[in-house]
Image (cartoon, rainbow, N blue to C red; front, top):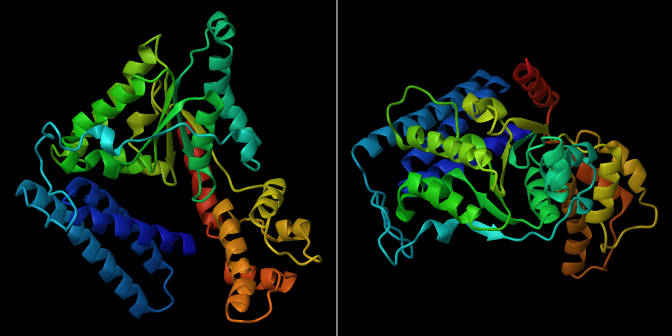
Length: 379
């Protein structure tokens, strides 16, 4: 349930931020997801009053989402904020912000060896993306095509973004990270132009990876909602991917990450697009032990802390959960020392209390939903 709350808060905030920026299509997607999360929370409410209050919240979010269509139709302008450029639906003029100003471009140093666990996932990525580039002659001999797209899906906090960056590191590729809010931001020009400029920038590199985070927000399942910008952006992304896939000179790879793969447009999973689907699960025992070792390293730790036993207790916790727990445990002796007390250490009792106060964010129902989706897409 904690994860559902996190999803609600994240989508609500992004939706409200997008509305304030005049990014009506992006705001609609986020606000609808926030409303759906609140409906799920209403089902788990303990009293009828609480259930009704949560339904009312969901209804207000639905109304805000519908208002985005009206705002777009009327070309309503968002109020400008100090230090922010005014919104515009016109393409950027010379000297104004261009797509290259919002594309996050880097050469990651992280490697697969830096990520605890997930060995099966790493091997799947190697087979699809790394080995064909490391052994081009063998790949050609056996008809193995380098490139294409991989969809990383699974519960939140399992390291999908880190895996994407590590893939770029393994390939010494330039890493482009993009989100729906980036592409749909009107003050940098038309969304379709932004997509083209992103792909052109990636193609100009000797080797590059385009990583679309929260891809369900950029390529959601299409509905009969008219000819909005999302209806134009989705084909633009899919056609662009196919263009790279058909080019023998292509050195552009695509990675997408999502916590809700069932909300994707089915067209994105066709061959030549994100046809390889890789499940990124919760960490196993060995991975949890390694994470504890990493996150508690260089912190004052009591001699009787047993990391192996602690790793067993954390079955069902995500990597993000474990990091949060370690940070929370370290805060206790830090605050004691900061308030003038004697500098202490992280004890087993502190870690036990942190576990009690920090339940896992991923439920059994969530993991079953991923298993169900995987079975449906294989059918």
